Image (cartoon, rainbow over all chains, first blue to last red; front, top):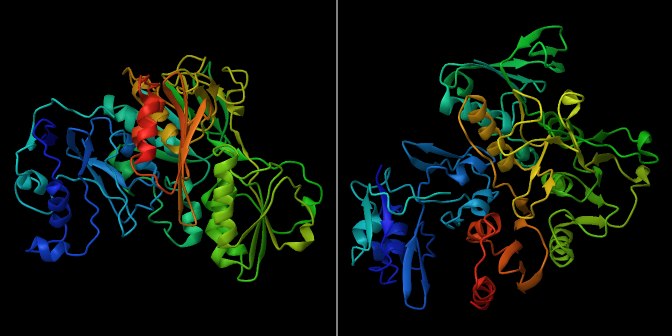
Amino acid sequence: MKRIYVNEKWCLGCRLCEYYCAFAETGKKNMALALKDVKINPRIRVESHEDINFAVNCRHCDEPLCVKSCITGALSVTDGVVKINSERCVECYTCILVCPFGAIVPSDSGVLKKCELCLDIIEGSPACVKGCPNNAIVYESTLVQKGQG
Amino acid sequence: MRYVIIGNSAAGIGAVEGIRQVDGQGVITIITSEREHTYSRPLISYLLQGKTDEDKMRYRPAHFYDDNNCTLVYGTVIQILPNEKQVALEDGSKIPYDKLLVASGSSAFTPPIEGLDTVKSKHHFMTLNDARNLKNAIARDSRVLIVGAGLIGLKCAEGILNKVGSVTVVDLAPRILSAILDEESAAIVQKHLENQGIEFKLESKAEDFGNYDIVVIAAGVRPNTALLNGIADINRGIIVNEKSETSHPDIYAAGDCTESIDKASGQRKIMALLPNAYMQGEAAGINMAGGDKACDKLIPMNAVGLCGLHIITAGNYTGEVLCKDNNRFFISDNKLNGYILIDNIEKAGVYTRLVREKRALEDVTEIIREALRA
């Protein structure tokens, strides 16, 4: 299956992916209007340390610890994609406890959020991939950075 | 192949999913004495709080048993007959197995407490039925005493706090959550809960039962090991290896009834946690079906929310302590032994991985120091 991969050599640390991610779920047309004065909870986050920048999001691990650990059954795997059913999530944060990539984040609405590859919200490549100005984020089937949970 | 699974909670369900990764055909029978669809035990406090309902508490969808082509039997196993390879049920019936999993969980323990026999409304807080009974018992003006300031007692306190007159938690220990928090972090959490209206009596015996309408006994649990007495090695829990095998051939065990190796400390212990139960059960299922799966990364770890305060902990609290605000890290020999995060819990899993994999990092101390400075 296709996954999102990030090449830290090309990541500028500009954090546009975080905004594209947050914008994608609003369903609105204009990013500036949609996100003005909004505290965003993106499901991709840029980590920076000195000269190194890289964006981190869900790896859709083959052995997803978050799914195995979820106390409610809210997390499950469908066609290789780790998905969260927000109706069943009770915000226990066990997935945050176990995700080795720190890729699951709380949101203002309470329930946990994670990258679902934009499959249900936009056509084609995920929003962070489309929006990356330096092509550091790609959407492909290569296995170079496969999650190992 | 005939698989029999005793227990219908996380470990048992993990086993079904493990078996079906390898064997789509074998006959799976799950036996439960609880007479419920599989449900998430930790959700019972959320049920009292009104944050979930019995339908949403199902640990797997309603069609789970059909999807996995397995049979759920309501009944109580009274004996395992390892020579005949059968389990005997209370109703006199016997079910044959080729591979057996004991995922019998644990039971609430009632310590001998003077005066407890005078209490009319006494409860445990382990099962869905316990939660239903407590829900029916409480009233707006109930004065509730909870015996035990561990996870079960405090989740119960949170669940009923806004539905009753008063909640008092009593414990012999000098601090709350003594199994997962150190002294400093326990004090922070206790203060938060006191501000929400929970009263604590620590270093105290449970007494003066006449002052309370309802008593909840949350003084600990005991692994349900009796079925394997004289059959497999048992210490405090049923002893299993990385493959979830007991010392008896073709009998596996998983979940809260077992003892296994804590990867972080190397010690054998009971780590009665839902994620560990699922992973042990899944490994058992895969191995029962002829696959090869090691479940060798278990550590003590917890994520718990109490009245809006989130606490995440993992590993063991030995070594040098580095702390900032409410976050504490325990380090020795360039390894992260454990951590306690309160409130600021983002990316906790990155630390959990360091603990679980005992990854020695030359600069782990520097990394944590840097993170704390940020």
